[in-house]
Image (cartoon, rainbow, N blue to C red; front, side, top):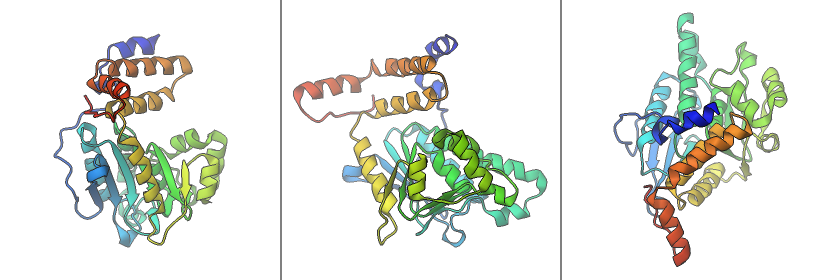
Length: 295
């Protein structure tokens, strides 16, 4: 009853997602993070690409700041309907934290830097629209943790995964101990983290860590192509409905079934007065494609 009463007092903005006052997303952010808005039939899809080839997309302070700025801008962006998070460096998604940078940090600053990556993972997880991780290559340590913070992962057949931190005498610190356990189960997550084991895409699929495995192509973009196809299936649907579905699923997973259904009821109630709901009904009756506006 506590959750039901609490939900009744919340509006859709305050329920999960914070509002951020930021500048509009640029077509291409400088250096480490590339942002591209697709056009024509793919309008509504935003592609965020990691681009630090000399360091295998290792996560340094500069990359954290750029990714935070990029993903936070999506919180109030009504033009975006789906996001693909990928790498622009062939053969690698992300090798994890920049250990060379980490080695130079004073001990007193290490916890703060780990907290920044953890905060980034939380920001990615709470983007209102679907975020698909397209993993073409290795996703290790913090890189795998960032992928796990997305709604789901699609992988190329040649990709490799692993939370390898215990090899370095540390543990995953960007939510990996929690998100991997929720994805594959606690016992398997313990085995994978304790052993710092690397595992291939098909094993990740068997474990439940990824949704799909696609054959890699010569360009090294097999997972991206697969993610793009899924995004194309998402964008014709009611954008506000998709947001509410994400909210209901993500937060319902954290509670028991009764409270989960209360969260679903709350999210459904936000859809009832929308123009999109009426447009969906009219389009069905009139046998035409709906023209959703997100309102």
